[in-house]
Image (tube, rainbow, N blue to C red; front, side):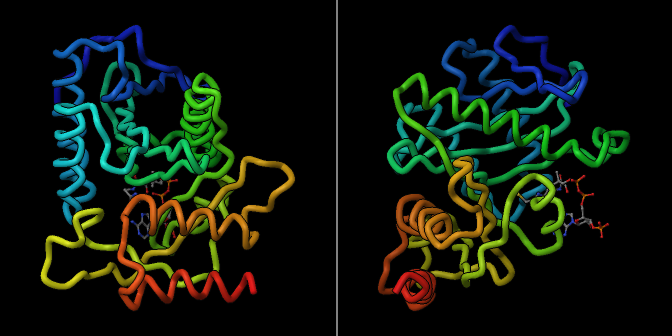
Length: 242
Ligand SMILES: CC(C)(COP(=O)(O)OP(=O)(O)OC[C@H]1O[C@@H](n2cnc3c(N)ncnc32)[C@H](O)[C@@H]1OP(=O)(O)O)[C@@H](O)C(=O)NCCC(=O)NCCS
């Protein structure tokens, strides 16, 4: 994998010496840098998330058109340790609802092997701060972060301030392209984790769960609410609110 020349648009990660991130969609990078970042993003994505190739098509289309079909702000941060690319983290921000969606994230094991246990918190705090700042500039507020994950990483997400949401969660295997298959299919073991940035709202509250579900299921994946699994997700939440 090529090492990218140090770029002035990189953001340093507080608490993680030598670590920095650079967004594939940063408005101020050159076309050549964007090409290099896209190549890196594809390499990481194929290595860590081979089951979700649709994301690469979405990023390519976003580079070409500058538009997002979901009207979210799209970020794919490439992660560097010194000048070496060591991972990626994709985050879409729903400005209207104030919810940041952490979609795909991976850091090479070697790069995190000597880091303190708290590294994930420091790292995600830094990404969240970038999203919050971006929205503040637009006069908006992000106060909720949601991510979907298998249970194996539960302790790690909790260490980064996330709470497991206790509702059934079904993630479409084709992402927002779920309608391209004759029948929509879902991953079996995904769960929803939420972190509230508002000190007055608990991460595991019904309100947080409902906003996270709406942001993922309705706004991001634009799933048809008549699909049984979708109806289950949304009605369970409705029942909790009743
Ligand atoms: C997500 C990630 C950055 C977290 O790094 P970390 O905080 O250093 O945590 P670890 O990788 O050491 O994993 C912690 C535990 O979760 C388990 N785990 C890791 N990835 C897992 C996965 N995809 N599914 C289930 N369990 C997983 C590990 O086996 C480990 O279990 P243990 O504590 O019993 O040994 C890192 O695991 C990674 O880059 N993974 C590859 C991509 C990925 O799975 N991303 C998550 C989906 S968005």
